Image (cartoon, rainbow, N blue to C red; front, side, top):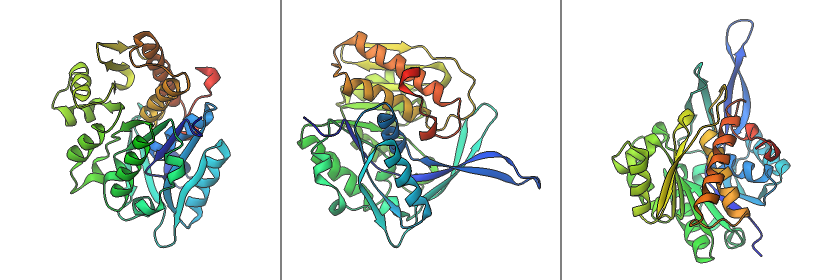
Amino acid sequence: MKKYDMVTLGEILIDFTPDGVTPDGFPRYIQNPGGAVVNAAAAFAKYGARAGFIGKVGNDLFGRALRTYLEGLGVDCGGLAVDPDYNTTLAFVSLAPSGERDFAFYRRHEADLRITADELPRDMLTSAKLFHFGSLSLCAEPAREATLTAVRLAKKAGALVSFDPNYRESLWAGGDFVSHAKNALRQADLVKVSEEEGEMLTGYADPAAIARLILAEGPRFAAVTMGEKGSYYAAEGYGGYAEPFPVRAVDTTGAGDVFFATFLHEFVTKEISVSDEEAVRRAVLLANKAAALCTTKKGGAPSVPDYASL
């Protein structure tokens, strides 16, 4: 039996989320664990599944806080390395009244980009049912080589591979997001994109066309998240629209991550076949609900709903 339901690799950071203002009118922030792949690992662990995380933090209070948080959820952090020379990545979040957010990243040569292929824990990668990654560890070397090496090792060991581009424009300044993301999705079995990412990768704005063209690249399942409009999903022989779960959003940070993590959790732990259209649809609808509930609280990982509430 595989030791992990999911092992994920990539960016790990602190999100500073707005929390009102001081008496003098300056913004007040609270710290939240961040990173799309961190949110996914947190969701798996919170749902009771076996999750492992691979990444790199600085030898600082932020890195220690991230490890403590993940381990407290039950995430195996045996693959979380510490860099003595580079700091943990930070991001400051701004929120619109609708709950939509924007990010200001402090990440050019920070610790999460410094993980090397030699630091990969091979035993974790070969003991996972699912290996999950995103594009932010593909922004620069040596993290790019480490990520692609991890994909190869996991696939060779028989793991499913899932990919979430999680595009952030400022982090790809001067880089080629499209070519790296296309290469990544061709190696994945399960892919989730936002409408914006889907249009960047396919040239089409229609979710059905986006999903169809992603499947043509090799993945067996594709989902397109559409925010408050719900989501579209497709596999060979079928495709469909999944209705949204209406809520009053306060912070959309991590909603797409929680959507995909919830779907992946159902797919892996319930051993759903991609050919089982009804089971796939149920998993997508559950993912819509989880993502919506996530937006009713601030932060990404801390706002993952309890599985019993889904």
